[in-house]
Picture (cartoon, rainbow over the protein chains, first blue to last red):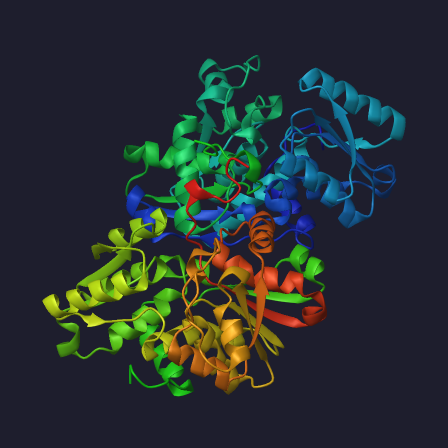
Amino acid sequence: MPDSLPCFDDVLAAAARISPHAYVTPVLRSRSLDALASAQLHFKAEHLQRVGAFKFRGACNAVWALSEAEAHAGVVTHSSGNHGAALALAAQTRGISCHVVVPDGAVAAKLASIRRYGAIVHNCAANLTAREEKCLQVQHETGAVLVHPYTNARVIAGQGTAALELLNAVEALEVLVVPVGGGGLASGTAIATAALLPDCRVVLAEPEGAADTARSLAAGERLADFVPDTFCDGLRTAVGQPNFELLRRHAVEVLTVRDADTLQAMRLLWQTTKQLVEPSSAIALAAVLQNPARFAGRRVGVVLSGGNVDLDALPWSGA
Amino acid sequence: MPDSLPCFDDVLAAAARISPHAYVTPVLRSRSLDALASAQLHFKAEHLQRVGAFKFRGACNAVWALSEAEAHAGVVTHSSGNHGAALALAAQTRGISCHVVVPDGAVAAKLASIRRYGAIVHNCAANLTAREEKCLQVQHETGAVLVHPYTNARVIAGQGTAALELLNAVEALEVLVVPVGGGGLASGTAIATAALLPDCRVVLAEPEGAADTARSLAAGERLADFVPDTFCDGLRTAVGQPNFELLRRHAVEVLTVRDADTLQAMRLLWQTTKQLVEPSSAIALAAVLQNPARFAGRRVGVVLSGGNVDLDALPWSGA
């Protein structure tokens, strides 16, 4: 299954598999933000998920789907942050070892939580080739199973459980807005939404400085060769091939967002909801606020994907 | 009633009176913080209260307890922040006018929300005499009723409803920790706890640089003459006379906390719970973490009193 495209049954299986370990996160409302957007906003609070991000869902599903024999030598991944911490904790819940290949320059807060959950950290240069080579090397040396941050089918299915919960908790949502980086959350959301509530549109929020998903969907082919320029540290990766394929099939929309608007939305979320969400989450609210014609009057689901902010590197520090 | 000491019946009356307007805030838990404190911590999330602070409870009780005739000319108060915003919103829920006397140098975020809720702002110099004189002047000119931030009996009774909810929501708490500034929350909590769960101890957390409550209780008389030196902007005021009297009667304990420990507790709360609480709230967790012998192994209630942080003046900015 890890190499084929996941389907809705896989999302349902994931929900059952992760339920002893993952939280059913709350859905938050805000009078002020509803007024500002002239819409009903329902925020799925994945920053309150374990490890502070939706990533725990996919990692947990991947770890617990392994056979005893597969799980024996542990798991390995490369991740600039949340997926690494998520896999580390998921491995800990099963009592197996976890190796995380971390590129130089990763966010300090995220690196700290990878270590806190007991993973063995391997450093490498900050480019995809170096990460994949180091990962391969660890696989060969340890026998650990690779759990890719977003192309792994069980990871995608796991991420789809956030939308599953949101659509079950809130009736008749008309639009669901999620951020897109590698596309694990985006494609899992597309699968769950198409099956549960086909009339509900999935809208992806993508940084202008890393808008490969928007360009890829417009071109009809995956265009992964670009240099990201965004402070949304969770959204700098190119959309994965299976993720792109799923997003194309489900005809999702993409809205691109300027970092300045994301930053403003993040401050607004902090101030009005008192929820510490990271830039890669705030981008979804920014997409709503920047496109009033698209969302006004609607019942909108917004996935707040994570809350792992580096407090020593706030974008307005020293401003 | 506003000039006499409130009792538990007043807290119950306040709970009924504010229930159409105030939120019943959730009680939050954190595995990491429990592990760190070796205790069971139950956080009453008053930063999720309307206006982002427990202050809405007392203000709302005071506004809705007024007769039609009293309410007609509106209300007035002096406040460096949360109480001003709280009274403004409370007045708005009743459709009456609200005047707020604001000392120069008040936190920008708090000033902004006072204005957002439609209050008429009057500026004055940053000392108690100037505030009280300006307040008196507004009373004379408008006929508005003064609602003092912490000595007003209905305000005290209203603040007591947070502890009421917490003690009803969580069984068998052994200690309840709340911050103390003017003492509205502290004395309301003492009243509610003594009546509902007499074996539960009330512990106040007070900044070392504004430890007048600790000194006053030790001396057996109110010592209000001091110059505060703390970044807990909500806790710079001296404890009020009726508040002191109630705290003395209920034999509460006070723990003093260094700002450095409060700052560390605030970062910890932000990072682990993703809840944006202000320094004046984080001090309660700091008191717990700095006194392990006092709290280890216990079921501890902690009131997170507010979340109105000035994001442009974070204490570690530029550090």
